[in-house]
Structure formats: C-alpha cells, structure tokens
Image (tube, rainbow, N blue to C red; front, top):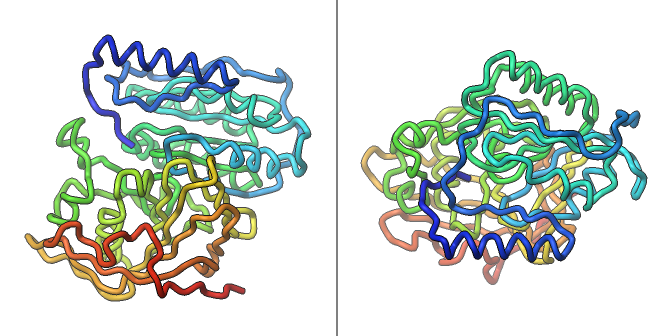
Length: 373
C-alpha cells in the first residue's frame, strides 16, 4: 500500500532483474512491488497507447467493479473485466486506462496479453500535477470503457477528490464501464477510504499496522476520506488490502469502530488478500476470483456498539466474519449476505495475538453458512 524508503544492495537489484527476466520468459509482464526508493514521479506522463489506434465502439455492459487485494495480479479478473465491457468472451474490444501515482507503465503489455482489449494506455500523475494536468487525464478516461488504479499510496489518489479526473472516472462507471483497482487502488473504491494522509504527514515510513492500531485505536495517524466515488455496491463500505499477508484484520476492525462512531449507518469492512479479487456485476453480486486457486476475502461487521476509549487498547466482541476462500463464492452487496462460512470473533488489543479464536482467517468448527436469496 505504501512505498518504503530503503537503499537496495547490488545483490538485491540483481535478484529483482533476474526475477523480471524470468517473468518475461514465461510470457508475462513482471510487476514488481519491491520496497525500493521511489523514483520521482513527473506531474503528468501519458504513455503511448498500445493496441488498436482506433477507438473501441462497444457499449460497455456494466457498470461493474473489480476489487483486487494487491500482490500477484488475478488474470481471470481482467478477463472478466474485458468480457463485461464487450459482452462476450474472446472478442477484441474495450479501451482501458490505467491510472497510477507512483508505479509507471507496468500494466499495459500485461493487460493486452491477458485479455483481448482493443487498447490499453497508462497515465502517471505525480504530486506536482496541476488542475490542467488532471483535466488532460480526464479526457482520456472519458473515451475509455475500463479504468484501473494501480497500487502505491492512496494518499496520492484522494488528493484528486472533487477534480475533473475523479468526475470522469465516475462518469465511466455510470455509463456502464468497469472501474477497478489493486492495493492502494482498491483502498480508494469504497464510500469510506483509509487514506493514509495523516500517516504520511508524520513520515514516509509511518504506516498503520494491526499492533499499533490495536494498542492505540485513537491514534491521530488514522484518517479517512469520505465519498471519493459513489458506487452503489460499495455504499457504507470500507475496503482493506493485503489482508492475510499483512495481518490487517485488527486494524480493519479499528477502522470500522472509528467510522461507526461517525455515522448512524452500519459499515461493512471488505478485506481482500493478495492474489485474490472480488468482481461485482451490474446487479451488485460479487464473485471471488483467485490467481492460484488459493486466497481469501473477509467481510467484517461489528454487531455491538464499540466505542474507542482514549488511551486504552481496542476491544470488541461478537464481530461477524464471513470468509470467502473458494473460487466462485458469491456475496450480494445489496444485502451483505454471502453463502460462505460465517462465525464470530472477539478481539482484545491488550492480549496479543489479539484474536479469539486465535486465527480469524480460518473458519472455526461451528461456523455456519447462511442461505442467501
């Protein structure tokens, strides 16, 4: 989600180059998420369009959303993105724009290989972008049928709130297009966004993790942005990423408690792990897709009022958890119901490892599976 400032050794650089060569030999674009010192991002860099120079004439069949948890890309989710735009499988069509605030052009060739899109273009927007730069980028989005936010740091994306670029992304969705994102690009898609703005203000290496969130749930480095987008399936939803790999259930629950204190509406936490994605169709039905047939997504809801006590560790009881870990499992975002193992978890920030049962990422004996209409 956030880049770390670190100097790479020569040996590490060699290993990264060898990994990139190996990935290319297997016919896939190497998408590296290394903890490297980031290269300064130009204010606006519009990469060449790859694919058909003529615009796609398809009318997208959404609106739809693609929620990817970070780490390895999920090929089948991008195939689904193409098929949703075009309305059929295997037919070339659909122009896609990839927006990034930090990662450069790392998706274009990969997307053209994984699905028969008409074209893909990446646009990199740095912190020095002007309002005119955002207007220029918006013009490309207005001619596309698909939009994908790459990873990086969501604090850069939320700065665009209220801009012509964000309005263009909303228009793309409203006219039936597909909007998606991974890692930081997923974090910005819910109605509520953990925005990392306050943490970034303290330092580039400051990040909200489960241990510090559980110990200090009222800490000021937790900050949110509300209403960046208006996607009906993600109304009253906050997303989190790299969920299992980085043990983020604890911090996600603190986010829910902080938000629940601010709104009278129930808030749903949707946490997605690496190599996993949920795609949501025009009817609001989400389907789990996995890159290597393993992965997971968790739906989190507080069933009790859970106030944040100043200066005290976070504690909550009877947290409703629904685990999706089988490819093809579905969740209805209109009702927040999923026919998947559901169970209850207690947490106590004063007693590491915090959770009871001890592993919230595995359904315990006695978990039930609701029957969803």
